[in-house]
Length: 277
Image (cartoon, rainbow, N blue to C red):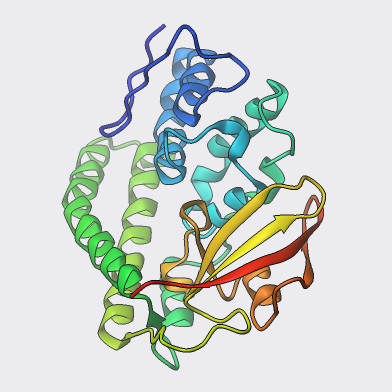
């Protein structure tokens, strides 16, 4: 069965690839193909957004609870259920060692409230790469907005507003995008570029920290950044996140613990690297 994807997602199933080691895009294809048509239509868009955000070519076995938790900062409430269903599917199929769905929780604040909390007080200190990435995100959101407005207009043509789920979803998405645009504009207008010329002795913003999962032995590598440019799935960890807080100010060899809904995760700091100019 072929499941149509959004632009930018191409599902390629390779016959010789072991079934127990699929990419995220392949797993999403299987999940969507397993659903009845009506249900597939409802969840497909949000599942594919999640896949794009994490990286369609990433192996499912490499997805961590931290990835799921970090997506919580980017997901609107109506999108949580479809993504959780996909994460539950991965666990039931034996594709992930840990249960990921409990770590995905939408923020219970409006986009406008979120914007206010992030833009009051001192401006952000961003890496050069982070500043450029936020500029690109802002441009992309400005491009998306007219399409969302068209979706609202089409959905509003249905006069039965009480049962008009597409209209409600489109309005929610519009509010989310507008709030994010306001947040990005404020951040970029007040941001300063991070000075990374200092000597590395302890973990600080701008450094790359290499961690070792004490229980699994897996190595993780993150650059510590301002919350506004964070994306743990892409190796950019917010200094305000639970893991970012506990590693900041620590030295090589020290062990840290992070509490999460599914338990406590233990890491050891293997090395601290100064990012290249």
